Length: 423
Ligand code: NAD
Image 1 (cartoon, rainbow, N blue to C red):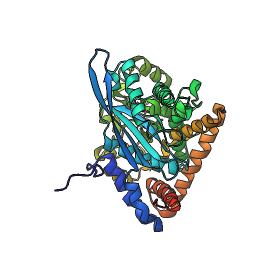
Image 2 (tube, rainbow, N blue to C red; image 1 turned 90 degrees about the horizontal axis):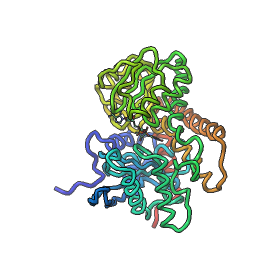
Image 3 (tube, rainbow, N blue to C red; image 1 turned 90 degrees about the vertical axis):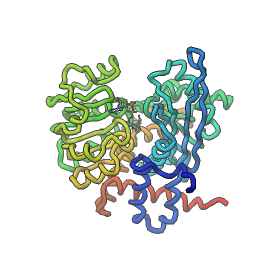
Image 4 (spheres, protein in one colour; image 1 turned 45 degrees about the horizontal axis):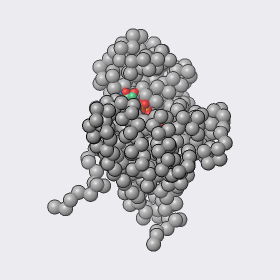
């Protein structure tokens, strides 16, 4: 028996889900289908060792990854995730989804993603900084403003990006702000970046609701994940007078049919580290969260959270994917059969990468825009792309996800064909 290739998917994994998504759109790609294999393998995948001297003097090794899935349309772009369950296969899937997302919103990037297998909650700030700096130095051979531009993802933030920028700059011998996005504003970061993904989730949800004749000020919303993406989406929903009736994070699940007070809940999470223990709500069982009556469900935690049984329980008419890959293959089919509209991740959560693109552009010119300007440009790009996807879905009689993939894959493979093969 031959050894497995690292590209062979684990059944049911995000990479498996992605490969099935590509197979689904292939019949719609016409002549470009001859290039489709390009989408099923990354351009390069780098695995690095990160040895660190811990605060107690022990030496520990962490495993890091940077995968550049496709660079046909421009430099790689995608976040860096710190999580104990990160694997090469997971990063592979996430990098591929970035290729699709960047092409779906038509920004001039390929797709990439990175990760370090570590539990940042168990590291001191100094240890976290050491992990970040050594990881950056190790992947320094493949990143750069015209090569591949990392950004924050799960458990990484503006401080981590500042360390990455500083380390890369030190190794280059000059300040290179454009090597990462999601930096602090003082270091070349963009106004509006922190809230951009949640804002984009809100914008696409509002647009879909409008198309379905659903008034947002009468809508009930459930949000899984109350971190950067989920909490901002919930905050904007509440500001639009929707009722956020249920929230779940890794600490617990809450329900309040009268609508949760989102600013108060955000403060509670800042103070205590999670939604559990918030007084103005009823604590519910983890599985019961999925059956709470609502109109809009926003999974904004991690991939694979909505499986078949959970999809059967969801009471919403509209599901907007705040997280990357939150709905697995089986659940996608269940939601389709149940007539629940799914706004796919590659458009719903693209707001972060769109404002990252603005940050990169601003860094090149060292000329910075106002937050209003950024939010207006974000809305124009994201909703413009979303309307194109809606129209394509109607024209082809396919779900929004398939339409988004058709548009994105055509852009990537057209670029592939025009660039040609070397040699
Ligand atoms: P975050 O770390 O700020 O928040 C993650 C949230 O998910 C936390 O509230 C956590 O408690 C919750 N969570 C984790 N495991 C859970 C579980 N098993 N059940 C319920 N809740 C759980 O991360 P984030 O930046 O908000 O990212 C969330 C998702 O959005 C990820 O899939 C990420 O890839 C995606 N995303 C993020 C951005 C961005 O700009 N931050 C952009 C695009 C996509």
